[in-house]
Amino acid sequence: MYSRGVGTIPLAEYNWLNFFITDAEKLAMFERGAEAATNFLLQFSWEEYKNDRAFMRATIEGNKG
Image (cartoon, rainbow, N blue to C red; front, top):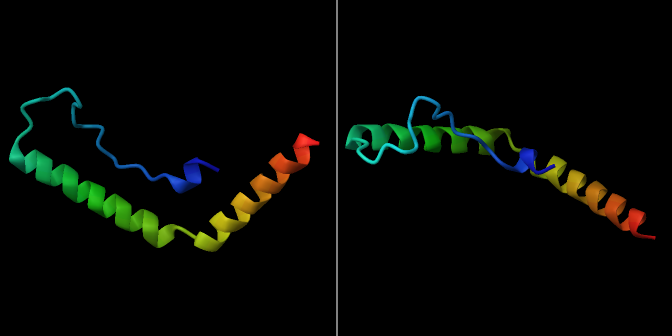
């Protein structure tokens, strides 16, 4: 459930410990993030998400008793 509500940004070629990243690299990373967010939102189904959350909640509440 959690993974369906979280997107990823492909940044494997960037070193997260590089404190000397160039402005061009920062811009490229930002653009990738914007593109990944756009793709995620275009593919996201709010109705499916709500249905899955309702099912999960009912399952959890049903297991309490």
